[in-house]
Length: 343
Image 1 (cartoon, rainbow, N blue to C red):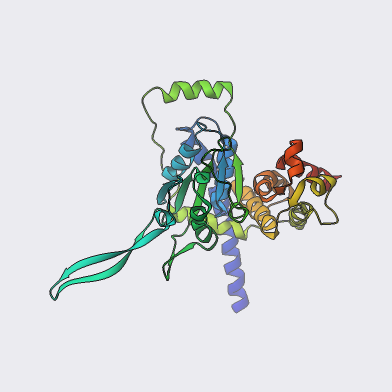
Image 2 (cartoon, helix red, strand yellow; image 1 turned 90 degrees about the vertical axis):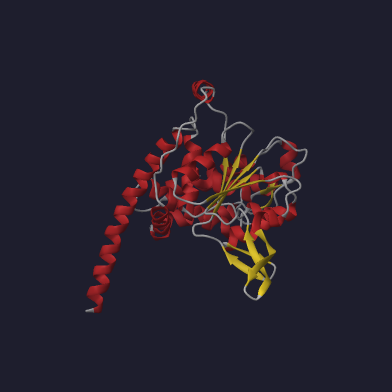
């Protein structure tokens, strides 16, 4: 009898997952339409943001000013029934400005005034947090995000507070300004599932941007998913199967980025100081699963892994001074890694 029950339960779960896959695919289309009401173009960036959303990962959006990075994140929060918090990073920002702080509160009671310590949560206590211009604040304040991003909780004083579920950070970074900015520590970069590069729009898109943004009207973003639906889709992603070949490729890519590995190509040994750790391979498989879910596919394969290599791996490589001197970029090295593995 117990075996029959288990069989029935597994069949019901499989049917439920098929329904959720269809919902994920439909949600992707609806979210593109919803965000398109306010943001022109950037479809590739939106795709990667949705991958990060379903994979419960954090994403770093990199691009010059004026490419709608902040607007994209704020609009995504509007399209979802999730709590939204924004932190504008500045050189004088303190860790307590992000996490919150303990305050002494005085209450009037029948026995007279009493004092108690009360925790005032900071903006990080939301489901979706926008860390705007994250490289404008010193490393000490940047480090306040480390525990939150990794453990989904925050310690203030001697008390640890759990963050809401889901909790995800979407950070923006301006790559061209150096004055008044601080490099992100490698330990923090590694906690971002994806690094998404936001490029300039096409000429036609730029015309539409100029026309739309000077009309004096900001379009509303319709609600697409509820918080319960978002969590259900996020819970689906780990259950999606992944082919053995896809896992082997993900691990091979991660190992090939390490200069001391026997299978590392010449580009890695010449230009990379430190390659991706095991977290990189894990992130590659997880992102591939999320991409498959958004396409309504029942399993993730090698094509999903290949498609996610650049956004997952590029920020996990620490390039050498030789690479900087010769103008070699992280994507150049990763292309050599892929070519070497596929030859």
